[in-house]
Length: 351
Ligand SMILES: [Zn+2]
Image 1 (cartoon, rainbow, N blue to C red):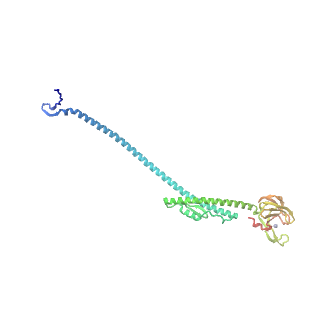
Image 2: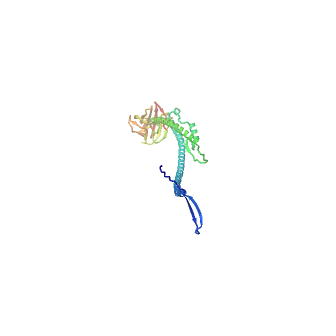
Image 3: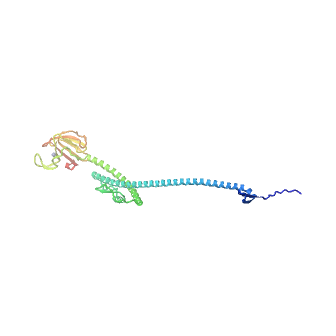
């Protein structure tokens, strides 16, 4: 038989006695041995638990602090964002207001340009009247109906006064402009600008034609005897029937007698070429100028002739000196205009 060794836990019990000084037993309690042996372990576990709880508490505190700081930072960021957003909104509001003001200004300027173009068109018609161009054949580039409507819709104070644009002082009740009005102003301004652009093109063509007319008119004016041939404008005998100064008989005076002093300058009444210079006993010293449009001017009784036949002369050029040569009672210029072979009244030509 094999001898078997068995370990057997012998249960023990410990008794704790608390004595007073007198030796009397005061408190006595019995504890089982396994409880006594477990006490250090339980104590260790308790310390461990306290340590773990403390550590967790510390971690929680740190986490709380971090979260608190993070929250404060977020609040600060949020406040900054709100401020920035408000600033952005204010900036956009300013921009929108600025754009609105620009739009209104543009609308006003468009109206001004339109009125000025109207003035230009009237001016051009006046030029055409002067040059004799046919104004009815020209396209009127401005629709006055459109202009009135645009002025009515635009928030501007432009009045028509004697065909001139006049801005008057403004004031009074403030009426805010709504988005719909702004859209309308934008549309009107855009349409007006497009129309104005076309009108300017039309006006440019028309003015170009007017310029050509003016050039032709100027050329015609240059060869038309429209100025006085002397510095003095004292008429001593008109064109037409009169009593002859020598015989007192009724006769026809073929020109205009202009009183002047001896040797006063005599001017060419228009551009042309000298077609004749000479002397005869009736007209004295005489100059004829051919103006190439069927018109001839004649200057008589001159004291002196300063040009030669065939010479080109300009309007206003000095061609001779006043005298009393030929059949004359005193110093004067006998001035004649002949058109297509017929004598004309010089006063009908002088402007
Ligand atoms: Zn005369």
